[in-house]
Length: 162
Ligand code: COA
Image 1 (cartoon, rainbow, N blue to C red):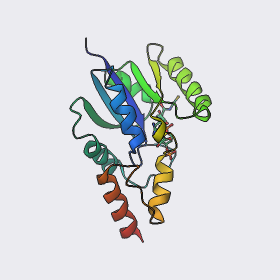
Image 2 (cartoon, rainbow, N blue to C red):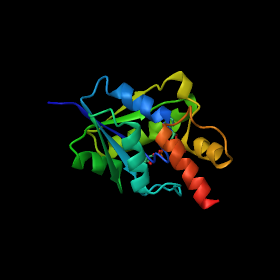
Image 3 (cartoon, helix red, strand yellow):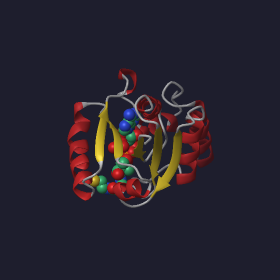
Image 4 (cartoon, rainbow, N blue to C red):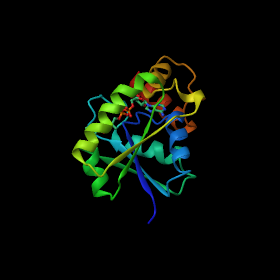
């Protein structure tokens, strides 16, 4: 049986931190479903299709990655896709409490679901989507933090919306 895992988030937009984690996870899973959350409490800059498309561009070389969007509970989406492993990244100690609670709650909802925590590369631990958006909004250089397709998308978003 191939090992399939799920990596979910809002990916608004996908950063090099996310891709680092995705590529690392492919070291021990056969296939990874990257799941873009539609209904997050956050007001996204990019719509769902845009977020899905950027992930596809950032990971165009990874044939074992499938990008999908989902609404509702993560565990329901995982079950519908036959997935029992949820990948999460722990960038810093501050991530731990929230992640711990979410992992236990997901287990409460779906006891067969296992959350696997990974440590991203040190040079991406300070990266987050909101910081990337903020830097781009004020014309800062984000080219070392995100894929070139994301740099272009941010540029056109902020130029269009200005
Ligand atoms: N590298 C860089 N940035 C990272 C990262 C990494 N390895 N891991 C996380 N981040 C960033 C994200 O970009 C995000 O940045 P932002 O707050 O600036 O947007 C931040 O860290 C938080 O990430 P995350 O915890 O993954 O939140 P999220 O909003 O991206 O995704 C869901 C959260 C969608 C996975 C979660 O809300 C969910 O499962 N929702 C479905 C509903 C559900 O099932 N709820 C019950 C859960 S018990």
